[in-house]
Image (cartoon, rainbow, N blue to C red; front, side):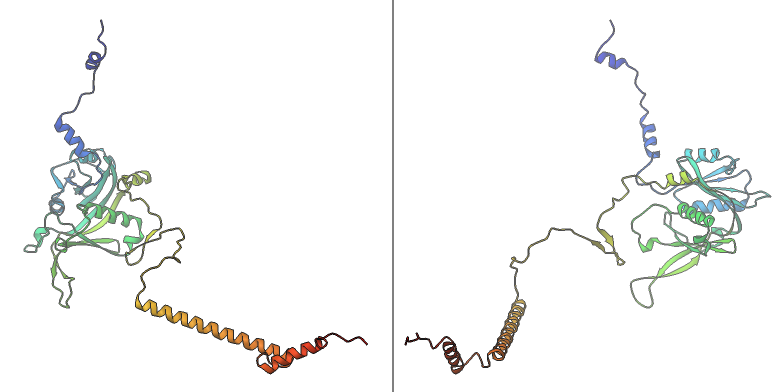
Length: 358
């Protein structure tokens, strides 16, 4: 007899549950609502000279602790086949990368790129010249581990040309660090200045030390010291994301999208201004607290109204008297005038008595 009920359910094949360590790893690599700092993968190409190897070590020092440097050489061509770099980024759980190489055709070559959803998003190839490493500036103060850099882009092309806009966005994404809501001024210890002049890009790094303002005030004055690394860059090959992939990479989860509030706006001073719609209120019968000033003002207003009303009545009486005088030839007031008027009325009525028959 075949098993039925709960006994049959126990014997049915079920999906095998992953181990606890595998489940923790899958949970750590899945998409998060609040993403942390982007980890960087630094690796060498088929051929790499000492200059580019030093450049990778310095980039790791600037990006630390969110950076991983691979010492072995890799036969990778990002612009022809991106599967290798996508596999390495997925394996090492990194989203941005830097590939350094050197050959006769492209000497001192540095490729900066990033991935999205385990696929190559965009990559920019740069030529490095006049490289000065961190060891070149011996004795100069260095940035703290994990501190966020400040960026300054100098030049018109950063806001005018699309290629430079993409490079600017890539550099900011590469060095952005952990997203924070507020910063302490003491944590801002280095600034990266990127200047564009006639097609050349000058990458300079300065250590920032805050001094007391000699003119007074709470805002400190920054003192810049060249700390490295410094290099001159020229843009070579580029590969950008398609419009659909770029749009998908900018999509935010629903939990982070703020709901649009109606009748609310922010003015130029950062103050929130809102409109409140209420029904018409009858405040005529409401008696509020009246101060002495209001009582005096109301008494003065009533006195002025009564005086104006009396003046208006006097003007009406004067006008009525003038009209009466013009019509009847005498004034309305006075005993003689009034009596004469009554006698005249009687006279007009025939003397006020009956006629005697003769």
